[in-house]
Length: 128
Image 1 (cartoon, one colour):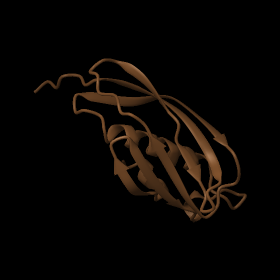
Image 2 (cartoon, rainbow, N blue to C red; image 1 turned 135 degrees about the vertical axis):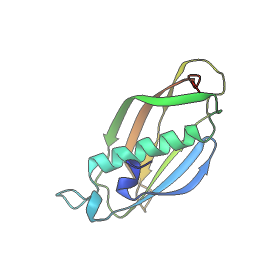
Image 3 (spheres, rainbow, N blue to C red; image 1 turned 30 degrees about the vertical axis):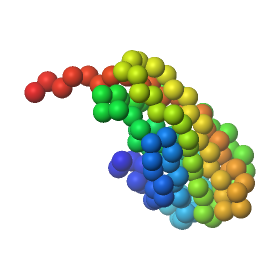
Image 4 (tube, rainbow, N blue to C red; image 1 turned 90 degrees about the vertical axis):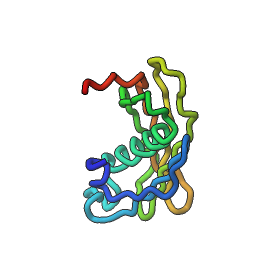
């Protein structure tokens, strides 16, 4: 994931239906208020939702984000953790899945909440 790698987040736990991502505040993700930039928070929220779902998605299904909303609750500083839990779809039909990842600070306070809508559908057959 080259783009998501740009924020320097680290995957701490990854299993089907669950992802926990660590993001340490550092200069590259800081804004003018000396806190983590909103777009870095969006990035880690989307990453957590995608990894949680994709880790449990059958090989014949693919997913892409359709919609993403974020509520920024408080300034994000220090060590942050993004988490998402879900039940990955398994039916080989087109469906929309809403996930709700969150980012908390080292004290456990929520700094951002997301709502991510994924379109899941059967993979297109490859043409060899």
